[in-house]
Length: 307
Image 1 (cartoon, helix red, strand yellow):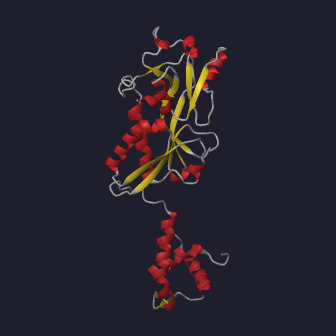
Image 2 (cartoon, rainbow, N blue to C red):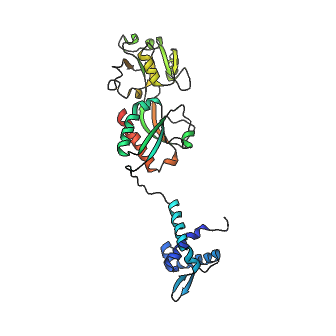
Image 3 (cartoon, helix red, strand yellow):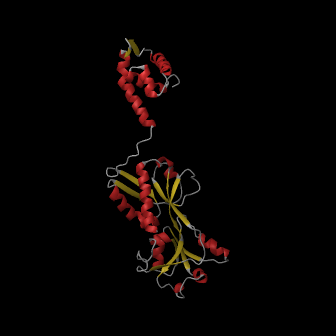
């Protein structure tokens, strides 16, 4: 709209409200001469005098009176659009569904506690967890999900992150496994076992194999499954050995009953890289008070479970 200057709306509103060039100029922090020039431009743009002398005062023309309320509403709405929203959040009345993408390990670890904590603060909030088949940033970018839990991929530098906890891989096997008979899992005993591998991408090798390869060793992978829960159930009922993040055991194997359930954990005989698990979101939600509350709640609940 090259022939319309929307910058004139605010001074027009001030002039019609104050009915004084001097008062309107003071209201907007302008000089009286600048406001006089603006009034001249407005008269040209509208084809109407707008304000005319009546003694020592100015009075609006019928056209100006007719549009005064509409101009004021337009100016108010423009300010509301362009000014930051008030950072006010009433959790008691908040009604919103948040979609969180996470793997099964995090859901088993924190979904229940997170739902309880969120429900106590905001009864109208609902949480929907969806599977995490990969690290594709498309669902975050398109607004299909609100939060992601996991390790940030390298293809979305604009995404925001906040560290939840540092994790590590541990071995798991059934209680009384023969490889633990001599007091612990040795490197030789580990590679002699048959293994179950967790991979969403149907891969047969991982960080342990890289570490073993440096020692000139090789393990036998007998089975690939899509989730850590699958692996833990399988090794509990067989002589297969598994590999899971420590957080999948709830942070404390004894406290969460894995020993009683017939499953035990052991330190790997080789070094594997650490895992940094973060909460990940798109910048569009950075200033959203409700979203910020959700992020803080996820961090607080998760850290209470993993520390």
